[in-house]
Length: 343
Ligand code: ZN
Image (cartoon, rainbow, N blue to C red; front, top):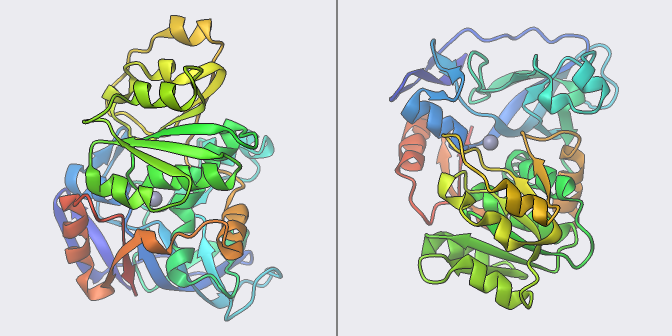
């Protein structure tokens, strides 16, 4: 089958490749319609690795996908041919200790699309377990369906934060994931989100959403903005969504006593943290790795209009132009949010 293959670092090709096509009893086969280009896909393209995950042999990219079911396994009762769906790209071992605890995202044996050596979904057909395939409500487009995966990361962060109605949150980083976190925090009950970045174009996009206050930290110290907004008390929740090592300087100072810090971004290097400041405030620190049990919630929020992800789809490319889509994404233009590929 034709697929977008990362041959090695800096080399992509659209070519025929052998991919699994057997539909097991609990699987469905999906005609892929839309695939979003994720920062991780681009990182494999430009760096050949993410931490311990190294691209050693050709790998199909893509893990943010929606499409239509064309075949169902003999034991599948929840979905039928013709259903429009999106797919959760991580497949855990459902009998693992992590899965039994409801933490299937941290199952060491999880198989995740486009994480080496596992092939992704930038190919016309994929086979996937029905248990990780979700029916799109009629008013949710394929483009929005392919946004469920990145939004799920934001939702996981919002769930881990244990938001209370009216909380004030800070989000550091206004990239796609930072915006997803901000929208999930608002939908989850925050009254206001202060989002910080260095790029005016990214802040402008985030600032179009009601309830989001953009702050350019080149111009104003984030600590001053937070102090002013909270009469010096601090934010209820601070989400780190930039992955920058610099974001950690003074980060605990942004949170109120007893507040929460949620670490979403993954810095490339170890970070020194000020444990004493965190302890003196009894901060609760949460971490996020992908997501678990949030795809259905994400879809419900999109379908109800509680979150509108459509303005974040800034470019759409054809499958034939996939390499061009990745080259554009690799440029990292600040006013591009989500590039999608239509198959
Ligand atoms: Zn992604």
